[in-house]
Image (cartoon, rainbow, N blue to C red; front, side, top):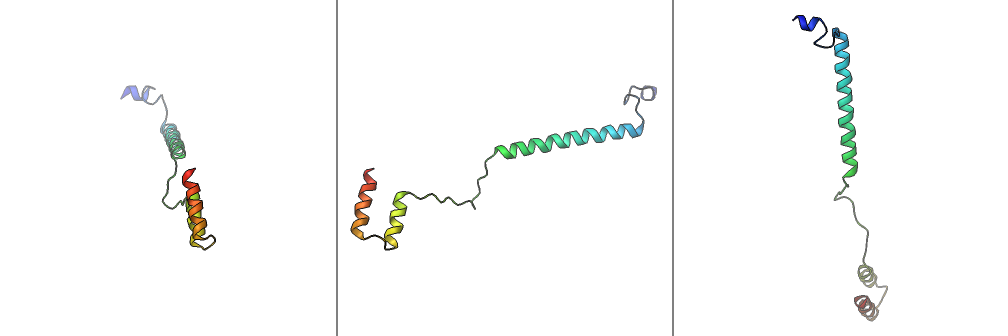
Length: 86
């Protein structure tokens, strides 16, 4: 027990200073873990099923125009052949 009282145990700290250092170390590690979490979370791309892709192919647009009655069947067939060639 003599080694503890003479400065070997916690560097001669009294109880209050020991708890202060424990709090400082806890705060340090909590901050380091939080920052690592935020860094890793920022590197992982978010893929959510709620995110809807609005990309439409030219053929999708052509089908919608034909379905809406904007173009005739002959125009649709001609434009479809043009798209298939390119």
